[in-house]
Length: 113
Length: 114
Figure 1 (cartoon, chains in turn green, brown):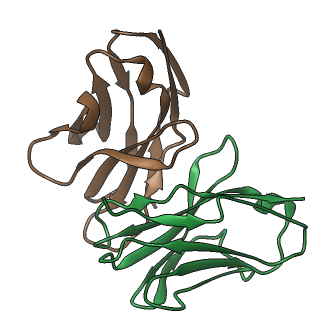
Figure 2 (cartoon, chains in turn red, brown):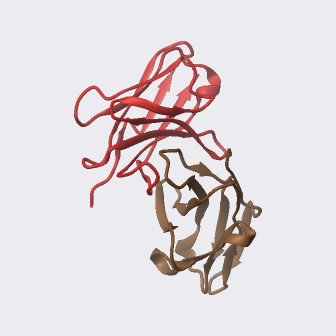
């Protein structure tokens, strides 16, 4: 069964450093997403991406964040200068359509120290 | 903007007990509705979804949910839970007909005692 894969599974970084979280969405999906879940809190939307551009983003997704689809298979989330409060589980997801079910990856646990 | 409420934060049941987890949403238009499950250490998995048609939908692992439009609710049910159902359950909605993001509820942690 096709699945969304994310790497790495756990990333520890120092405050102020840049991190890139990587995702390989399901191959025939057209919509890609990043969500995050701070420990003990709800899953929050960060950004959606379609047709090689951001289609929607939340207030969380400020100038420190960026997304890219550098080739036909990868979808990355970059945090330019990490803060302690960026520590969370980051989930990548993809879907066939814009409002169909999203399939989630296993997540990358980001720890900023 | 839409919002989702899950009123039960933690539910503890014994095996074979019946389960009902509440989910209410607020949104002025039509939505697609989902229940996701997150087993310990694993990713979010789709349990079931409702787009249209029969408001009683059946999902995997014996779960079902009923969409009651007048109550803006989409409660999850299972007649007899198993220890392996221990997980966190998330209700989510997305406005129909637009490429919008899922809005999740805060989740309900279900613990099933053997």
